[in-house]
Image (tube, rainbow, N blue to C red; front, top):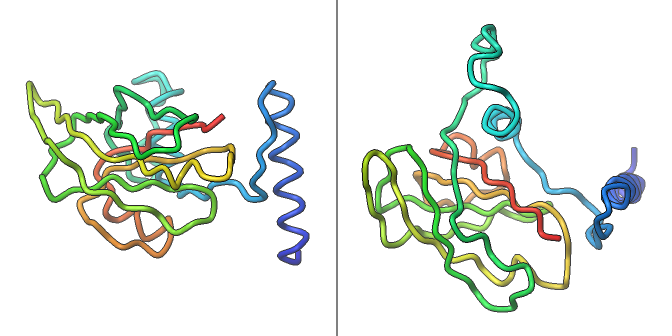
Length: 171
């Protein structure tokens, strides 16, 4: 399939499914890229009942600890926002939050104000206003990494991922 046809196909599918779910069709032609490890972890964190899949160990994919966001960013803001995140994974001050949006290069932001209490690491990160530019709609994936990158693409983020993904649907 040519790249032009792929853009049209992706935009059409995305718009249809969002419309059928009473959401505004995306103004962006391509969906946010992801990695199979992120999809697997997301399914296990949000869909699979713990212990209900006794053979899941046969699937040779990394399962990451969940990444939680206490105060999701406001999609209506045109300013950088500070968000608070947490995970049960051990976290170091040198870690970073990586934002994956559409087919763009992953955006890396260092964490700040790391606190640990009862095995839960809580920290803050800037949510850049640039991710909300142009009134676009769609998925933004947040992951915590042990590297500040830069990352060329989503696949380059995977080996450095510590926790996540957190899925933010910018409506």
